[in-house]
Image 1 (cartoon, rainbow, N blue to C red):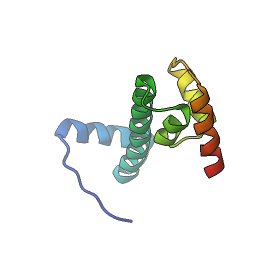
Image 2: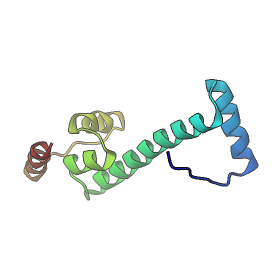
Image 3: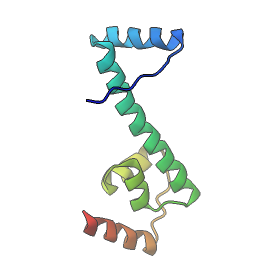
Image 4: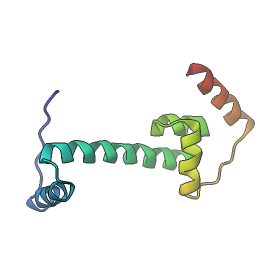
Length: 100
């Protein structure tokens, strides 16, 4: 497994250690878990922004968020996004489904 290092302010290191203790995990496991969850949230946040601005269709937003279209629709509902599904969106989704 490759190694990555990062410098953290003392407050963030203390918070990391507190969360690791809370989860009864070592620091490395907590960092991997936080990174995985954080990256997923960043992908979803970007997908939401592009979807809201009209720069991404339902299928494209799902690809950006690295989820299925069904999961994206759930995410959109949880975040109170309007699902404006056009004929072009449906065609894009059909192409996406074929690629799977």
